[in-house]
Amino acid sequence: MVSIAGVDGSVTSSETKHVNEVFDKYLKMGGSEKKEVLKVWEEKGEAPFTELLIAELQAFPKRDQIEAFSYVMKYISWSKTQYNQSAQKEVKGVDPIRAELDLYHKRAEYIMRSLSFSAKEYATATRTLRTQKR
Image (cartoon, rainbow, N blue to C red; front, top):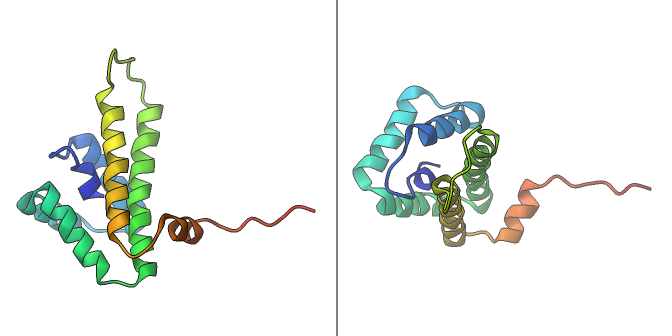
């Protein structure tokens, strides 16, 4: 999530808020663990941090990679929901927040392609099966 939030080279306060929301809601991480992750991101820089993330995730089985990637997608979803629900005025020209959300998706796609699962496997693993109505 931090790799995605830092796609533009910095992590803003609203991005930190969204990362913390996912950390707290889904991962139940403590403050020291969150600070440790942000410290590694600051030390490595944006691109090397993403490569470090990919290298560490590749050491895990496919199922764990899919679970970790699902948190990335939850972060993107949460950020997009917050953006859509905000009462910001219309921006003329290119909306910088919308452009950054597009960068989030591109970075997430890069991470997914670097791991051991396909988009179809991710979709299958993260969707609940629907029963057919008779």
